[in-house]
Image 1 (cartoon, helix red, strand yellow):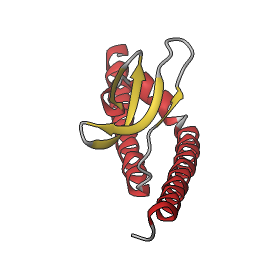
Image 2 (cartoon, helix red, strand yellow):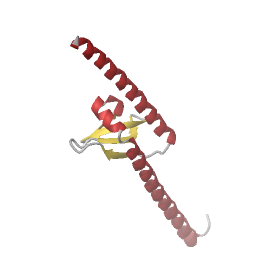
Image 3 (cartoon, one colour):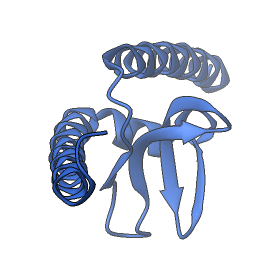
Image 4 (cartoon, helix red, strand yellow):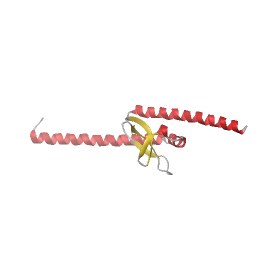
Length: 128
């Protein structure tokens, strides 16, 4: 009888894992739809230094996990890591917004620098 309960429990676990995978895929699609165009990573756990992130992987924006210098799509991670990642998605979204804001400031500074360059150039040689 114990074997039957184990089979039922494993079936439930597998079905729940499938539901988690679908939810993570929807979360990934939602992040892609934001069209932020930035990468960000946050610490997933202190034990092994794994990180959760969002960025391009093989020319496709993906939820990623990173350990040492290796990045992989989150969907390929083990169940335990995917569960941990699911609990940190809100933190990742905040990190993405902060990174987008930071990059916008850098771009605005670059635009201002180009404008100053053009003004200096025009004052030296006249309007182009």
